[in-house]
Length: 193
Image (tube, rainbow, N blue to C red; front, side, top):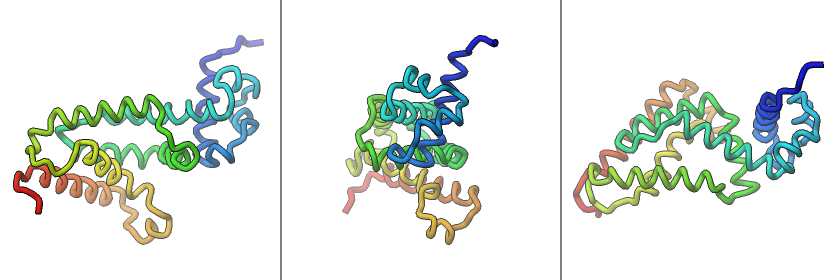
């Protein structure tokens, strides 16, 4: 009998849980299906990750950290950041679905999410003088818009998305152009009005 590779088992469980929660959300997910997909004993899931809610929290943090690591934040290049985030979301639709389920079923931010978004907002605040001190928007408000634009096409309702172009490169260009307009608007030192 081959020795058990605990780390490999943990990875298989986590990968199976990502797929399960992305498909069914917290309420619809089943630990039995996760165990079967991971080819792991159900008791190992509880031993490694705790109950289903705790496993869901782990999946949320895993997805968020994976995105954070894969898409470095570039506060002085919001256009590049938004385009790279869009690319990531197109390539990892499960991660966006997990966050959508989480917003519905457990809307509180995890500690890791709060920390990483605070770091991004602080980094944007540090470069804000390059955008002009016009006082129009707070750095957090700018982040909300940039993230929303980057995820808009991927998370659009199916009926609307069916009417939109299916060309990801064109959508990426539209997102980059929209964030460019936002960045230019931030640089405009005229008072709003």
